[in-house]
Length: 353
Image: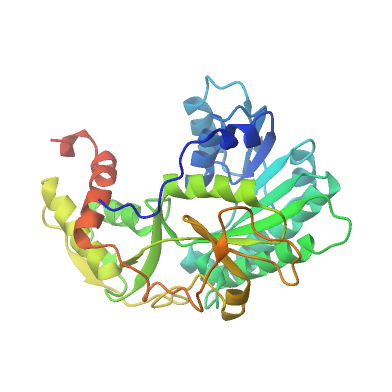
């Protein structure tokens, strides 16, 4: 199967960069945060601190990593500045993954989305500045580009806050954002939702077969987050190179995999787009094209009036837009190959034959 993103080679610079570092991961019990934590533990870090507000997820993660001595947990909320001030004390790097990500929930609860996504970013920036953290890496989304949803708007503001922080004079902390699309099989994404609907005997809900979305796997997201942290000089926005998925093709692939697993009878029902949803996503603002560079894995947008240049292996990119409806698509056979192991694992041993 053709790979979605060229995989990074395991080179010594990962270990050199992360070795002996103290690292905080906000939202560290989430789908991406937890995998990032596990990956960082393989690079000789002094300590990884996981901050999240879900005690049940923390308990389960502690049990899975009980043999690891260089990990600790803080039960807390990014809305609370004093909690973040204490959590960032002595840290070298901070990965800010904590967020409310569900579009529908954010639409229904805009104040809560603002408090967590936007004010949480204000708080983590302030805490990193106070404690002179070396780098803060903010995890963003394609929904921050020309946002039509509350969630997208809060992420847009978070990116702007990161950029503003990087422009402050005499700042020791380096700030950057990482922007990518849908992460397949992450908590709250469509694949786990469909599996839950199937298990409960409900029809599998589909918004619009013509919709397109950028997509990548959790391991790919983690590897590219680490590369962006290494490359961050201050004020950049890193954009992952991804193929896109047409929802109708994903439905066909899901049907095929369920059939392979002797799970027949799945019924799909069209529901129409939900409030705030787009028919396609974008990863690039038009004005960013003038400051866009690329290597094999990603694009980087340099900050306005930057006197710096990207690190080696980057060249100037020639893109005016980066849209999921125009990007290279995953084929149905490729999606089947990608989804089969994920769905078999999720459905349990009865499907493994």
